[in-house]
Length: 184
Image (cartoon, rainbow, N blue to C red; front, side, top):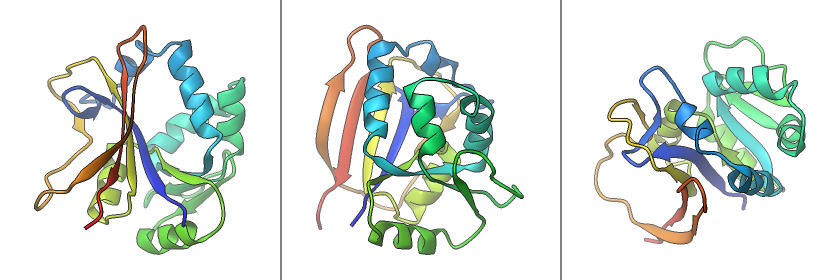
């Protein structure tokens, strides 16, 4: 069975974006080591799941960008979850307006590589509420925003996670934390 892996950048205080959606804290810290890591991670992804806001931002940039990451992002099939968009014409994308759990169940039981959820805090929170995420792969940036759009929302009860992998990136002080749900 394929896994849905939430792959997100977050600040140390848990924000996935600034108050107005700013992500400059990511680009300010990214270097060749992090970009090479992202490039290698894309080799294991068979599908990318995006929210509408992230899709629109990505399609404007990556459709004309060059290089290995751009080639992979343009090629990998995408599901775009949006109730407001009418079409999703960039990068091998299919628009999904409803029945998220049904679409994800079908994807997970099919053949292929990992499924990457990379669509902003809103879609990540929806997937968490629907219990559709199997693993969390977080790049934690050495930044405290103080306010912004949180990745996590309150959930009822405690959820156990098992650490799968950690990695410290040399220059920018970014840390990878990769978790999966514990059994039981």
